[in-house]
Image (cartoon, one colour):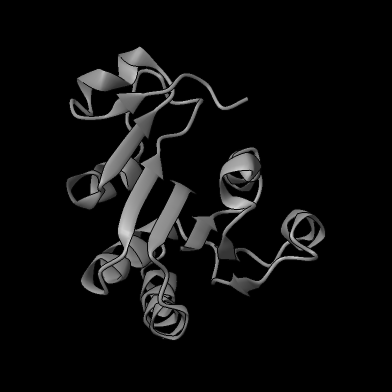
Length: 149
């Protein structure tokens, strides 16, 4: 199985990294920002750098959509996993078109409100993971696994 791990740098990337016991045994690649924390953490990993800022930035959404087409066509992942943020949106929609399974993990620090990214990808995910039971009011078919900390 080939896995694409998509996430902004910072906390989103850290949460994906904390899932290491699940992805370490698989062929994988990462999509994230070209920032100091991501280049350091992923120094020995295959990675593609996406355009940022992503939140509410239409130009970078378009650029990341083209990047998603290029990368996903080349890599052909079986599974795409993301913890957000906005860079997940084009990779999930293009990935779905290419037949990849999608797992989205809603962020730990949003208990009372859904994220914009979560709301956008929820309808197309194969598994939508929650870290709080309270998040069920926004994502009724989500699966609560508790906190990834």
